[in-house]
Image (cartoon, rainbow, N blue to C red):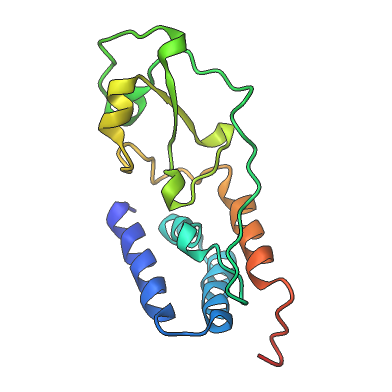
Length: 163
């Protein structure tokens, strides 16, 4: 499983939704969601379903998701080695560590302790919005609750028998 598989899943879902009504887009999303739940779990598909492009309900209203937050979480060293295998040579002070997302916020990653990565300023800029160092073999602890919340908000009030 790789970054390419993620972008393939995301593209497939987006193309299937092209020129569809909001209720049809919600049903397409749900079809992939249920497939993910009922078959062997495929991490790239689960992550694609979390993408912010899909935070729109069946009526066309955008929504936000619940965020755990990082307020009380402390990261004291640059964790660049976790994503690159290379230790940070700058040894920044704990107050100079920036909080970043393992799975990017723009792709649907939460503000959660399970998605927190501490980086010095230079390595945070170097990482950018990329997926460098993401472990495609480990299912993130936050993903199931994220998908369940998207599912609930996306389809709330939709009567599938009449739409």
